[in-house]
Structures are given as structure tokens and as C-alpha cells.
Length: 108
Image (cartoon, rainbow, N blue to C red):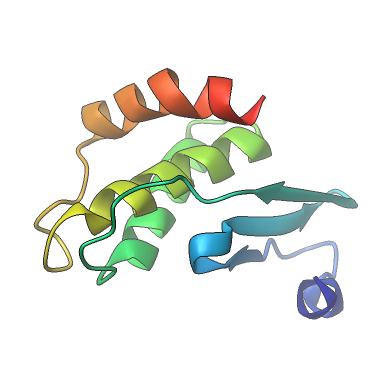
């Protein structure tokens, strides 16, 4: 948190990816932390890229910050189910189904 606080300039959004400990950001003066999803990890290659793609997808469609972090975490988690950086990267529909079925009830 201290590192992100030092980067907070009220103009740039910084999201810290914490691997198995989830992610966090400081947004509009508020800390928002999302735990990682429990998943059987095979390979973490590309998980950060999948997280980034999921975050940007929801951010650009106008979702709230917590939902952006949750959806991004779901995308990152789903990408770890198999070997390689893209072999098990979730489709939009798959990530959305995972998000709807698990994320919303699990984090609220």
C-alpha cells in the first residue's frame, strides 16, 4: 500500500497486482482491495496480461472500480488453468459467466 500511495498523484490510476493475494488500488482517495480467486493453478504465464485485458474491458465499458478489479481478477485466474500464456485465456463470455456466478456473491 505504501508504494501505491507514493504513486498516487490524483491523475494516474495505478493498480497493484499481488498474485495469490489479489489486487488493490487507490481510487478517488479510497483503497479498494480484491482477494484472489481460489483456483487450481497450472501455469501463471500471461495471467497479468489477462488481468490487464479484463480490467481495460470493464473500465472502458464504464463499470465501477471494484467490478473492474473483480472482473480483471477473474480473467487473470482463469488464464492459469493450463500451460502457456494464451491457451486457457478466457473468452469474454466465459469471463463474464465466471464473474456473474462466483465473483459478485463471493466478494459482497
